[in-house]
Length: 110
Length: 115
Image (cartoon, rainbow over all chains, first blue to last red):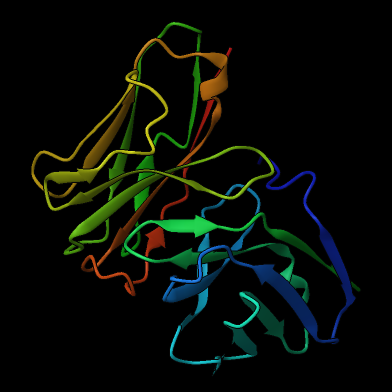
């Protein structure tokens, strides 16, 4: 299938290590934030979300941190696995349309 | 299946041809969205439906792009007189309602290549 994100920033991590992917968002009025994972040839897959009245939310092996002061979002993946290799996008929402960041390619090294 | 489906998955068109891309949202989802994703970039909003009503089409690049959802379920994105710059992946997403904090679920996309 086609490649997603040929020229995206790349984060390479060793299998088993923790990964941190960062995102800066643009609109201080955004009230909902989502992280998506996109594998080559597939659509974005929901990972985790967070509302603006929170600063941290945990899921299974993933944690999202929100810093509204500096308009920054991060995704932490614990014990990174080969199946985590993909492009990761953050998205912000103020009304109904999502605004996506540029994406980060995560490569997991065996 | 329970997810959003799109067809065709791949479409090759000669410049000037018309194309139609189909989206089947998750059953019961009120809101439906179309996005365009160029290679190496994040998805960009095209248009939004709430049931059969097209409430926002501000992201459609030109009047060659047209979307419909006549019965509030399946949607079709039509591109007339395709141009090379229309080459991209077209993603459809749906959400249960239309609140700003409602999660959108994406389909696999249709990759359009215009020669």
